[in-house]
Image (cartoon, rainbow, N blue to C red; front, side, top):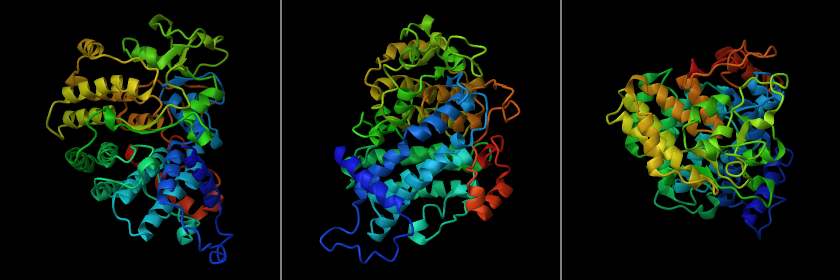
Length: 490
């Protein structure tokens, strides 16, 4: 891991240079050394950039999405998403971090593999990760630079166009299908693959599982296309157990980039509390004392785990220490993995496909599988998490059996419960399904008319530095506001 850190620092210098050194390539070539950094080292770097640092995980993930989706709550005014305030710098933090790092690096890797004639596993893995990176950006903002993004050094495109989300999604699905087909039985990535450690079977399962995720994303705007791709993804072979979870491994140093960005946030910020909405839903769930602990004395006794209402302020809550917070002894470590997609999510989506009549099988069985996987994955993700037994799962499911009459609601609620700290996915799936039903906050200073935001905004600098393309995106999608819905959320 230390070697990877040093390589990543070197890459940071490479990617920070833009146009000023063009024309000097020949002068700077050392014939005794390799002219290109090995793609494996670059791959480790882009994976960690995708996981993200404290900056964007603090702002885009926690300060905005976690409280909008009512996983967490906070009285701190700068937790802008809880009361729907507009903090432009916070709301654009993923864009501001991803485009100069993850986007630029993944495009560089793809270009290098193309130049090297690599059309096998390494290219397939790169294309899958590339779709994941752009899907986060597009789901959060809508129309984004995609087909021309990250091409400043490669092709001299400094003002990339914003592609329509409809077109982006069509390409996402095509890319995933082709990428999975490219992956063979082995890869040269090895230890540089911080997600699956070179296990290509798991990469194929993730590619198909991501295809299912993005296919289901279209269910509200284009049900026919959503169904066709969901059926294709399921048939191609998705995740089959918690051993397939797509997550980025982290360590507690030696440098910040190796650390889990959420964990770094909780080292610096003690204002987050578990939302009353989340705690009330989880009161009879064996996951609750794993995920939450009381602030004042670290108690995980159910009677002590009280959620704080969203929209609370210092005027309405005088002592926040009585409320539960994310369990610092279990889930907030800087060495915790960053989860990208889980087997539980896949089972819930399969349950939804059956419930909608798109596929055969038992929605109840897939639902039960999802609940069990969501409960039992915690001891695999977090070193200090207590294992939840089959008996505990069975008791929970017996008390809350699947009811087809409200199947989509039950699936959506469990999906939400299972995506704590995967706030990008929780926010996206809630916008698509409408579940769980959330009661908005209504602070006098809100900028949404008392409704939960439907997207995060574009950086204001885009309006001046990429004016023509920015204007075209606004004309097509709508005003650059939190209430403007992205294409698949219409």
